[in-house]
Length: 262
Image 1: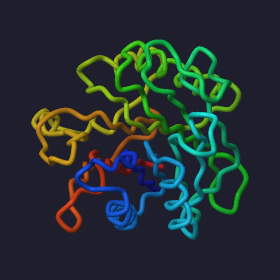
Image 2: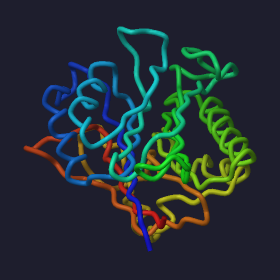
Image 3: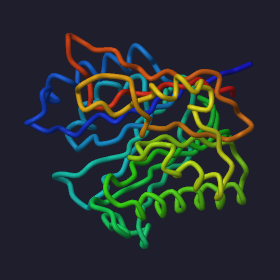
């Protein structure tokens, strides 16, 4: 049996008022990525200089793709994907906005506070061209409940549309800015069958599945960071990585790492 590892990691955009600034944290984040060495990584909140640094840092190991969620060369954020070069190659890549006009980069939708984007890639095995997997990564709005719901509907509709053209297993990572009990996963299941990385957890573990910790640490609570996938490729393990580095946290979110049957 072959397996692949997937990580989702909200990196926390560079904010000078934070207790740990990006110039400190970037080395901690890189160390965490190196230690876990996921085959696929979805990141959220990296701005232009953050993503440039990570791309250069990991260029030998990962192919990186992302599109700025606003039409600017000076500021903005990415929902970028990192693809391990010795495992996969990117044979197709696209991005769309989570808005009523998804084709217009920089557009925002519904009751969203911010512009939101989904970036996705079609993957072949390394040194091949035949696609075997699709990988989607996104960041839903932190304020707009309707925007979160409609954004997920757009993503699931795109997955279904692509699968009608060519059926492939898929992975969706992202910061959904909502806990499971608020119904987002139920909404997804109404649109398209998916399994969650948290399906493996016991009820007790689910009570301690916090992923956003605001640099305070802790475990009690529910997750807002997710890895979802095709029902026919089951999750084998899931870990919320709570490690500190040099007494600090690489982000205000814990990264989540899952192993999937491939």
